[in-house]
Picture 1 (cartoon, rainbow, N blue to C red):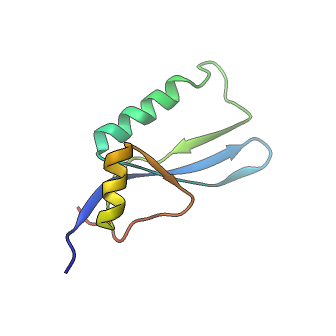
Picture 2: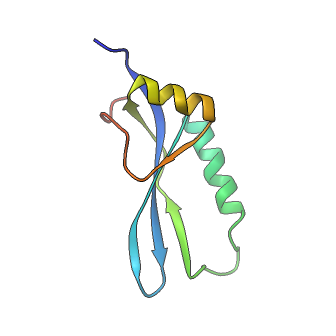
Picture 3: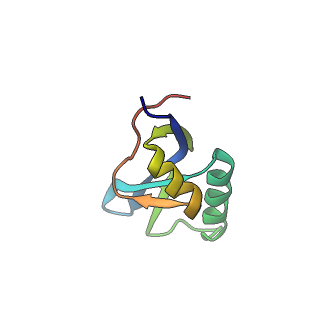
Length: 92
């Protein structure tokens, strides 16, 4: 049986005025804290007094089980982006 590995997953949704919403991929971080820091940095770069015509909005980060090799990649890179979820399950 393989070892369990967990990373923080953030699901992104593109929001475009006049077109609506669509899935915009996933990002993975070694921890919830690092995911929240990245999200805060992202929002800090957005305009404060107007809503952009098109932008991506993140979900709340959550721990998901992933393949241990993928978890090592996330740990080594600090963040990994994908177009599909890499989770095995929603444990933890």
